[in-house]
Structure formats: structure tokens, C-alpha cells
Image 1 (cartoon, one colour):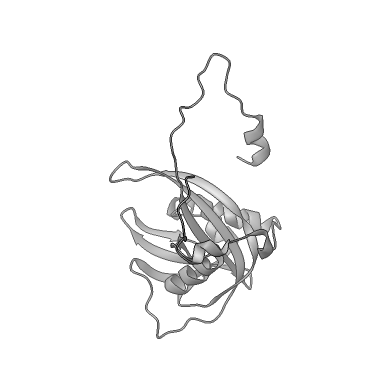
Image 2: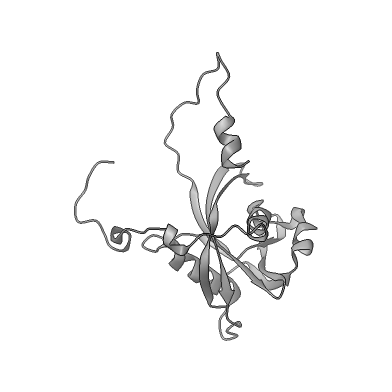
Length: 184
């Protein structure tokens, strides 16, 4: 559902608005990398079997989204990622198979290029391999996608969606402990 569709959604008359609850999505970063008409994905061993994902992971405290996507791509592919632009911000909701936990992910996706893999590096735990696939190969196996955002990001990229990296601003306070406390 795109932003225009969401703006058109209203609460039906007589229906109560959703209760106000402090809610925090899990922030992740992801890299969309194309080379010669193929896209770099990782195959991950998960509790739901071998699944495909973009090189992606959680944003760590004290790092910018760009630092996070460079780190995650290196950890999962052994390739040095060079971000060239911002693809977009995506959200999805997921229910864990084993625990039933309801999780919402907020994905900041970037596009760019990678170096050849550094064979001296070990891939992150759970990552089986990096694999290059065509768009049609990726579209043909949605049941193997770790997230619906794998395909969403691919389609955005193929549609020409591109934003400059300067769209993102990270305040210097992210990189150091706050000097004083202020109520939010």
C-alpha cells in the first residue's frame, strides 16, 4: 500500500480510533545491489528453512544508517558495499512462526555496488551463501523471501526510484552519549 492509499484510509464512523500505545518498530537497513542484470541476495538458514534476503540487518546503536548498511553487507557477503543512493523507507509486519510474536520492521534501503568478496572473511552466523539472481528468478520464488520487502525493494529499484544519500540526516548525538537528560 503506497502513501496515497494510506492517506485515503479513514476510521469508519462509529468505530473507535486505535488505542494509543507506545510502539517502536525494529529498524533495519538493506542493500540492493545490481551487477550485469543480477541482484545480490543472501541465503539464510532460519527457523523457517533456507530463505533469501537482501544483505540486511538491524541498525546498531551509535551508527548511522549508511554505516549500518555497509557493515551488514560486509558481514553477510564479505563484500565492501558502496552506497550510491537511498532507495526508500519500507515497513512490513511479521508474526514469528515459533513464538507468535508480532513485529513491525522499518527498513531503510540503499542501492549501490560491491567489491569482490574478501575470501578471508567469514560470513555472519546463519548466512549460507551470497547468490546473484535475476529479477525474474527473484519474482519466481516469493515463498523463499525472508521478507515481503525483498520484492518491494526490487520493484522500486526497477521502477527507477532513486533518492540522494543527502536525504538522510544523522545528528552528531547518535555517535556519542548524551551529555544531559531531557524528557521526550
